[in-house]
Image (cartoon, rainbow, N blue to C red):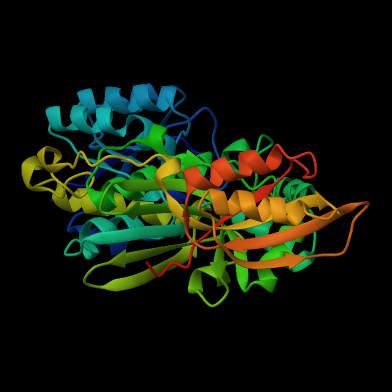
Length: 433
């Protein structure tokens, strides 16, 4: 059979890794597809010494790849949103199938892109957009397709996980570890997307759509970063038998879907709590299979290229299959997507870890506990530490409570003259329900 012709837009870390994997494993890939996969055209502003592109047509204008009649599949690896969106839509209009590793593009414009692809009879694949080389989207959309998914919880940003791991193991403050992560190339010069949860929210948007059959709804994901976590919080969590992880959580509550990214205390005995450094891991709970966990490299040239090339292989196999008969983009057919509501964070129920500093005066603790009780917040455990410059540090663990009730209680507590207004609150998840 004729070779499948691939055009690659972007020759950065993932682009060069994709070229290397396609070239190194060409024979095995051809055996899997049933015909060769050939790189016909590369669009990149500059060459990359990490890969050999001799003998391949190269254009400095990436849109030349999107309009090249010889290209069957466009692999979008330029990153960003606006130019990537224009490139992908141009390629779709020109009859190209799409493979992308761009989580922001899919999370924010996926609905539009999927509709354009459907209208033009082409496919879009994006396994590499979430968790690098971990085949989490195929696992959700195909391997676990028999299940009603109850919840998904994952460490889906390696930078944040590296920072929290180093804070715990090295007893080092957030700012110091963040600077090291930037020097090592784990964090960007502007680390906002990683440490504030935007990157994880993009990925969670995609995961939740495939898990629950809902449209992509990035704007409804609750986001909270890790910048306020201190070594004191890490140590206090350990005393209670927990570790702090920055999780993306999607949960079907039966009366709405929770979509949230935030620091979370999880029990030290859970598998997810043992995931350290820049590694990613995702737990999925299905009604038939129960809990499963997927672990691996969430970024990097060849781990991500592994997912990109897997999508190219799958697309190469499907090119002879009628478009309507292929696996739907989000695992569910477009006319079968659910309109189940996304819950606001105030409607989410969690247990909480609280850290506050109060003046060392009679009756202050009684005021705090009374306000918590008035707002239906029940205390499970409490530790009062030694006085620090006239302030007494108090750490509490609560029973499960609605976030709205907790917010109301903390607002009243922060208004007390005897309490420092910088109150730390971290949600707690046992990952068993």
